[in-house]
Length: 192
Ligand SMILES: C[S@@+](CC[C@H](N)C(=O)[O-])C[C@H]1O[C@@H](n2cnc3c(N)ncnc32)[C@H](O)[C@@H]1O
Image 1: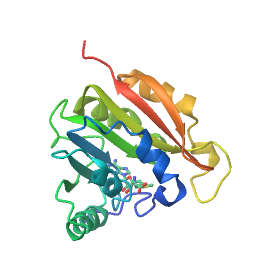
Image 2: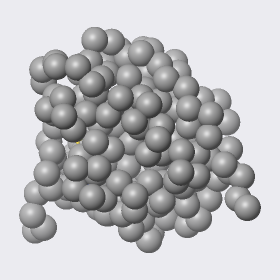
Image 3: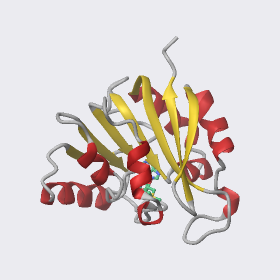
Image 4: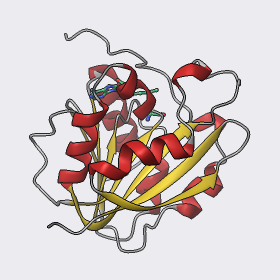
């Protein structure tokens, strides 16, 4: 058994306005969605329920117990369009280039920044998204609120855009998800 990753077992889904989140996601033309840093799938399962017929979602996380919990919950709920795999966001070797239409990273980017892994993980998110595909990032507002990470390591929407844009993304849009959280949506730039 691998060591349990930092922040494994934490989820922001109970803090957010779930209806606003699901409404803001451009799901109508998605065939392949990835939830990177899926944990137990608190985001992955409701997103998978909303996908168009024939579309599928894969959750990926370093945390083995989270991945197996997601796979079990999907099976129990009859969600045959969900798979879950153990993987490192900085090296998604199992995912082909430009395969995904939607990549979700829910309250994981601030932690990747903290650990010096954000550059590699965002490069992988860009690699696996098709041009025009959507990167959806949920983060904590840069204000004191509990539960959540220390304010010093939270990312404002502008800080997030400054990080994500150079990795190959354009057109940031921010959606309020309640007192603690926001969603930023980005489009994958066309390949040069
Ligand atoms: C705060 S939790 C968020 C879980 C989920 N997105 C949610 O909000 O319900 C962050 C997750 O990212 C995972 N994680 C952190 N760094 C990772 C990495 N380099 N590769 C894969 N997973 C990672 C952790 O194991 C953890 O499950």
